Image (tube, rainbow over all chains, first blue to last red; front, side, top):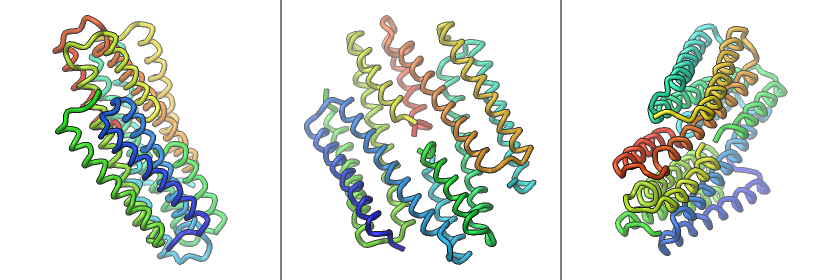
Length: 91
Length: 91
Length: 91
Length: 91
């Protein structure tokens, strides 16, 4: 299921900012920029991706797990999806 | 609310293993062990703590969020607790 | 200072793959794709960014810290740059 | 090689604090404390272990990589040790 429109616009703005930063990393590598400068940029993209992931987890938990009126089966399925993501990447 | 007894015994075994590793780190620092050896041990405790955290998150999600028969309020509260932990430490 | 050309081409290929994945996240949000599917993709971008970061750290350490013939001052500066990145993002 | 005594004392104090927190986790599991409380504690131990790891990496980099007067071979070995740790756990 999709996201509320306002939330989606905020998420899209986040993703576009990340896309811009990734393009800047590519440019820096082309221009043989200073190693540490590129590292800083990569590290900050990593933070931004982490922030996006938290937003999406939050939205997933609220919409598909905590929201009143869901079926037990829908909740159980959403819980397993969340746990799979936490197990694989949540470190 | 507590955990199932079998799960709790497994969790306790995990925590005791971590306590043993932390004691070994202390010993290595006392004995002025090789820096890289201690780093390896610290890194492996970090992995073990991450594993324990995943177990506890899994148990929290199953017992307090996905389990049928909970009230909407209890689920909402458990969801907020989970999200607070993910926001602060889940990176 | 820049990177060896072969390494740089590999790094650029990595970055372009990440850019493609970020574009796919944007598309999925537009199309209101399933929440868990997007989360999986974001999580895998996060892994890819982590991999890129490791490559860059490796290159930084080899070129600017471990390479014979550097001055003490250059090594000390490169060490501080590395530690700043590890302190801020290395978690 | 070992650490400076002052640094070592600070590191030992950190490790003992972590040992105390791990003991508290064990107690909480025994007493069937609230799930979210234990999770908070585990998450804060994880942060503390991360802090210890950063300290040790810092000390490793300064003593075994950046310090003037080391041989090229010693530096290269210390660099490989550091990179192995970052690759395996540095995420």
